[in-house]
Image 1 (cartoon, rainbow over the protein chains, first blue to last red):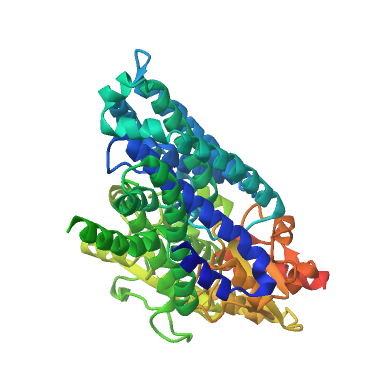
Image 2 (cartoon, rainbow over the protein chains, first blue to last red; image 1 turned 180 degrees about the vertical axis):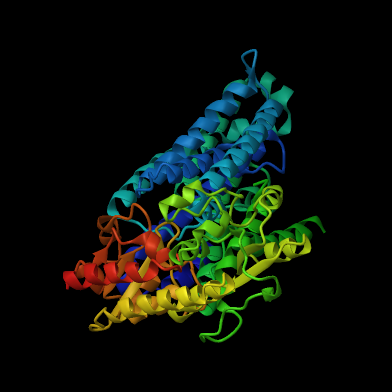
Length: 297
Length: 290
């Protein structure tokens, strides 16, 4: 599947403009992979099939950051990712503080605090959108997600640096596969088997929020990948996190690459530019339904 | 995200306002229609819901008839003293009614829905089609002058603008990439009056074949179409950032360092009487550099 997605990208490559395509390709792989992996980890942790990476509030936090950067005129090539990441980190801090009660962090409180912060963030974005008027279209476009980013060398370095750190964090998540497996079966059993569920919850949550923050900072809020790719992967590989987490990364990257190619082809054929999230959904849902029906039949 | 649907709606609204310039009538000078109301004589309490129409009203010297404007109307500076009735798409109906207008100025098709609502609410409206070319800008000025009963002033204004425009020497043609937003990358398409306006001063838009007014474009397209000059039409634009873009170094405009920021953005981005001045300033900035 990955090879398939790479093919057409290579075929349409014009050697002269290769340089501008490589960063986009890397960003697409990175964003799709991280979103799916984080989705898989959070679904495993929270034992909820409807969880997606945005439920913990960092994407709307990043949205607030971007809207603020536009309002303050801090729109330099690295100003925006920095603001987005700061917004995501702020939301993470808020959710973390709200979800902790008497020193304990329950999974339910995490989801609810995340949803609450998301809604507050969305409302703040709306307020900022009204205030920034002319940049309205830019904020909306950002929130719809796009990997069609123009890179300057500075931005590329910032991206490369954050991507390397992020992949490290992703590796850390994968290393928690055993605990996530045990937690998925039974939380009481997990406690008695020596899994520190408190520590695990905090770890997975913090890492996920930061990873989503990085993705959103560069590619905006691309929807659908983080929600559905883990399900597709579990249908194929079963529920073990050692397989699910890396496979989600690969499948997420492939799906986003394929979507990006569709978008590109569509734009070239018709001159109309679709938001990336729309394509991921239209492209991914049939795949998902096909696999679901075959597996559940 | 929970509000994706709402956002999508916003995008639809926005894209509708961008795309809308592309459909209907072929380019011609008769692209302004007025709602008939002449029987009641000249309007004296006018509300403008379009910044460019507000500017034209001032340029015609009949600003004393304006009783209300939008929060977007910011030129000339005196317009700040006028009562605000809300924004461009959703003015406050109560404030409209309190001002007792005898005419409300609107643009179509961007404000088509608002036009219907206001008509249904019993307001008298005059609807002006968004100009698709320079001739359309002049026609709009004349049409508004006619509507306000100052046709002669309209003719004088249009004549002086036209003669100013003639003053620009049409030099060698230059293929031009116009950028109005950096992230996402938005350019100007054939559907916008700007394509035609820039063509008048010899700047040929590389995206004139796109029917949309303001298309989001792929950075690679710019490389493929290799423009000779690049105009950055947004506040805080920085040519250095554009020159550093990865993969763009072979674009003639970049290698010859013909990227222009600090252009008269406000003048150019509004199809009003200041447009010609904007074109003159841009022309002299660019031609000086060559």
